Amino acid sequence: MDVSSLPQNTEVRGGNNVRTPTVFEGNCSTVLFALQAKGAPGQQQESGGESSFWTTAAQLTFEGLNLGLIIALAALGLSLIYGTTGLTNFAHGELVTLGAILAYAFNVGFGLHIIPAAIIAVVVGGMLGYLQDRLFWGQLRRRGTGTIAMMIISIGVALFLRYVFLIFFGGQNEAFAQYTAQPGIQVGPITAAPKNFVAMGIELAVLIIVGLALMRTRTGKAARAVADNPALAASSGINVDRVIRIIWTTGGAIAALAGIMLGLSQSLKYTMGQDILLLIFAGVTLGGLGTAFGALVGSLVVGLFIQVSTLWVPPELKSVGALAVLIIVLLVRPQGILGRRERIG
Image (cartoon, rainbow, N blue to C red; front, top):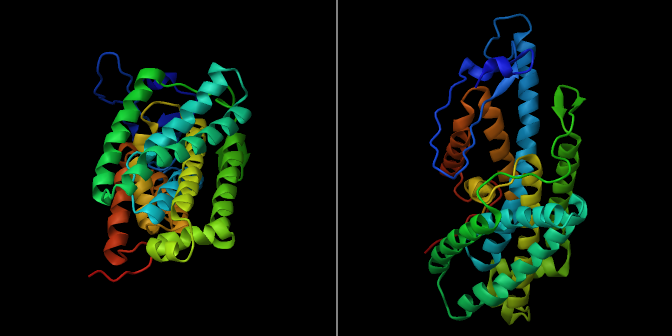
């Protein structure tokens, strides 16, 4: 990076302005440079260094909450599907990508504003989630396919969908027509675009509504019964297949919303779901497999640790720290933060 092209009073964090990416003909490659105000952390011997450190920490904490809520949205659908079917769905990241691409198609391709385009994309994502279980996963369950076999099949589905996206969407990065670049607003030590505050409010509201629906509504109680013991739930008169399809519909819609929110915070690309899939699994596992609020708590921990850890580690290694926290917590509490102990054998 040519440091002379940076805005005044801005510098590359750590002073390293050289990156050596691996690129291939016809493919795009993204290179990250962490920027900071001159005199920010790393140069704390200067006057005001301590104040700059805490300002940067506050900014990174906000960004971590933003990322954590996006991961939580995606993790919630994955956790619900696992809880009711036992399926570890490696194609869930592609459902996130699908939501962003659908919104982009309605927004840029058909000329709709991003808000109605996003609503339509969420509805279509839910419908595709229903059809996915009705025509594919449900058929495998009826044939008695084991959960490990279905997990391996989901990896194949993920690869298939990923390259379908590459064919129709392309390998380039794209952006929505609206809210791409907004001037930041200052709230205390935090500077953020208005869309970030609105997006976080929507994400938190959806997570709370789904969590309360699981706890208070009849369908939510049926879903928890199916997750606890499908055979007993069926013998009690609960239509297990119907409940699972409702969960798949909800999971597809929430994953689509997560993809849209991720696309608003960064550029769109055909691998965006794959890029955060490991973080989604980390959030679900850390919070407790099959628990809705566990997915929220675990994802927030992962998002916060990823962003705040860049105070001490290079941005390229920030995901490593989050996975290290996952390993440490699971060594102490294998069932996750909000998971339940289960007797095995």
